[in-house]
Amino acid sequence: ESGGVMHIDVIYDDEVGGVDEENDILAERFTKTIQFSRESSKDLGQNTITHIKVMLNIAKCHLKLKSFHKVIKYASIALALGKYYLQHEKSVERRKIMINFCGNALQIRAKAYLSTGNHRSAVRDCKVVKRSDDIDTKIVKAVEKLATEIEHDEKEKRKKDRKLANEIGKWVQKSLNSK
Image 1 (spheres, one colour):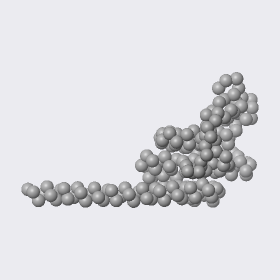
Image 2 (cartoon, helix red, strand yellow; image 1 turned 90 degrees about the horizontal axis):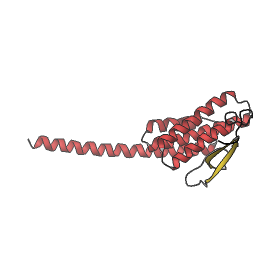
Image 3 (cartoon, helix red, strand yellow; image 1 turned 60 degrees about the vertical axis):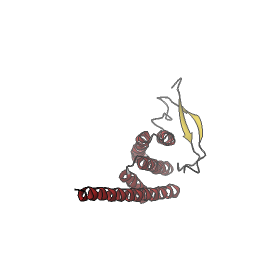
Image 4 (cartoon, one colour; image 1 turned 180 degrees about the horizontal axis):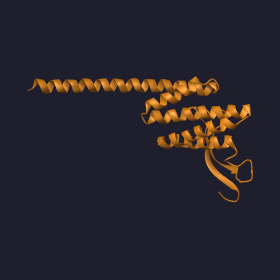
């Protein structure tokens, strides 16, 4: 922060809804300059959409770095800010943007939960997005794809657990028979 200007390094994506599938993303790194002044209505704390978007972009950066605990932290902050600002926002257009950012925060957080092996939380975030009628269909489709990934991951885990249980059972049986 210097001279009334704050420089924030973020990932920029053109879609208003905030969806960015990893294969489709054409992310361009840049330094976004936000006018920052305590008297200004465009203050980072007052510009609610920018505030949410900055936290969401930080989460996206950490997702690319595979810093999953930080992804969860910043996506949760974006989600909390979105929920708080939605309570006070009157503009229908701004509310829709905030709702989509919240949906995107849930999607990103679910990806991070999946990567950390926390399937229960990933499924919970996916269900919240799928239940909402207000979230953009692109986000919902991306979350449905993620939910399928989670389901597949859980099946693979159960398969490995059964195989391990069978091996342990055979080992125990073999050790009992050798006595």
